[in-house]
Image 1 (cartoon, one colour):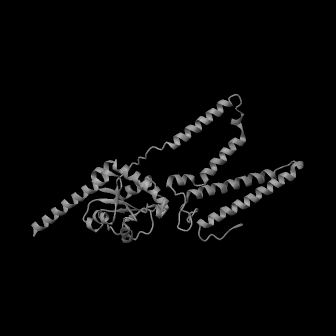
Image 2 (tube, one colour; image 1 turned 30 degrees about the vertical axis):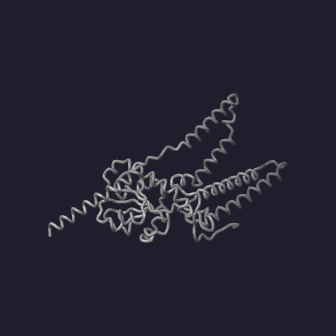
Image 3 (cartoon, one colour; image 1 turned 90 degrees about the vertical axis):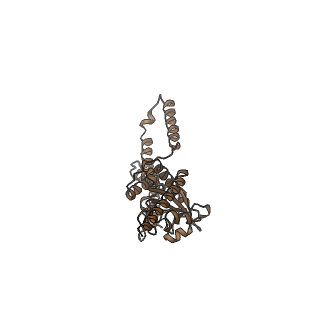
Length: 316
């Protein structure tokens, strides 16, 4: 009896080593292993037990007919994370692997796990129940590579240093901007009064404030999608205060700019002390007031869409 048990344990160990080698070979070819229903069962599901390795799996829908734009962005961040892990010292231990299940290739996996949205990021522990994996809360945290790296460290204790491919767009933009500034300063070297122009500095300051209060940095950090594409219509405003789309950022920036212009026009018209120009100033003040009411109504409308049950409105 003891011999049978020892033979069974030896056979299981041999099968496990062979399975790990298969997974390692697949991951050596590409950072993320494409899994269908059969591979999921063999590497992660019931046929993989017992196993001594973990899996990070992205559940997605990449085909064009699914119209999941956010899936492509999430996949790019996931590949960056997996490639960074493959270059880390922890990869040699062969205890953690990365995979992806596309809905068109593995709808059975989606159904068995109860996944009804994409993208989703799941952690299958080496000792846990493969039917109840841990999931990354992308609604609250986002799906950036740095966020995934922190999540992986929390779950596995393995640190992943993210290495992103060089993005030359920003250096090019900054270089062109720098050359433009140098050219302007050179052409106006005999008259540098523009450097002390209050209007130029005021416009620059307001532009920076509008950029920073619109949520642009949040989009850059979290990797927000442009919009939410649906079958019947597209959604430009995220229906939650914990999320935001890129188009929504531009909309908020435009509304805040309208509020700023309205406030400037109204205060400039009301503080006039010149009676000869009083009618024109009053007209400008009225326009500023109308802009304030209009854009504040739009701002309340956006806020009401993101905060369910908010009862107040101004014009619409």
